[in-house]
Image (cartoon, rainbow, N blue to C red):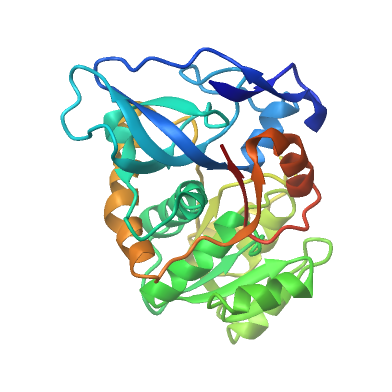
Length: 326
C-alpha cells in the first residue's frame, strides 16, 4: 500500500509518499481501506518531534482520523463485515491506504455522508463533545467560550452548543473567522490580541461570566479564562498552541469554586477508545446524517500533498479542517 512516511523529525519536507506493507488484522480487528483522512495539530507536533505516538500506533505514519470501507476482518469479528462504511479515531497510521483497528473503536458512517466529510468529523466533534458536554457538563441555557473558534474543534463546538441550546462566545485572531463562525451559530465573537478577552466576555454576559471555557490554546489564555468564568464554572484545557506554561491566581479558583481539568483523546486506553466510538456512533453520527452537524472543510488535497497540508495548517489561515484523500 502507499502511505505517507515520516523520515525523522523536522519540517513538512520529512513527509514522503512511499510503498509499505499493508497491515493484517488480528482476530478482533478490521482492516479499513482508507478513503480520506484529516490533518490535526497533533500531527504537526509529532512531525516536529514534540509529541510521541501511543505505543500501539506506528512511529512513522501520522494520521488520527479516517473514513473508508472495511476490506478484511479478523476471525473473531462479528459486528462488521467487508464493505461496511466506517469512520473513527486512531492513535496514528491514518495517512495510508489501509489501516487496522479494533472493531469496537469504529463507528458506521451514515449513508448520506461522504468519505471526505466523514474524515473531518471524528477528531473535531469527539474532542468538542467529550470536553464540553461529557466532562464540563454544558447544558441548555448555559454559556461557553470557545477559543480558536475557526479550528476544526472550534467549528464543531459552536454547532454542538447550538444544538443543545447553549450560548456560544468564540475567540479568534481575525474578524473573518468570527464572521464565518457566526454562520455556524456562534452567538458572539471576540477578536483577541495578546490573549486578552476576559473583560469583553464579562461585558457580553452582564458581568456574570460564562459557565464553561473550552480552551484550545493554553498559555496565557488559561488565566484569562479563569477571570471570565461564573461561580462554579468549568475550564477544560484541550490544547497548548499558545504555550505550555501559565501563571494563575489560585485564589480565583477557590473563590469561584472553579473546576479546572485537562484532557486528550489520543493516548486513551482501549476501553475509553471504545466508549468514544460509541459516542461517535450514538450522539454525533445521527445528527450529521440529519444535517444538524456538518464538517467544516477548508481544503481537500491528495495524500501525496501531506507536506503542503501541514504547511497550510501551520500558517493558521485555514477555517475548519484540511482533508487528505487516498
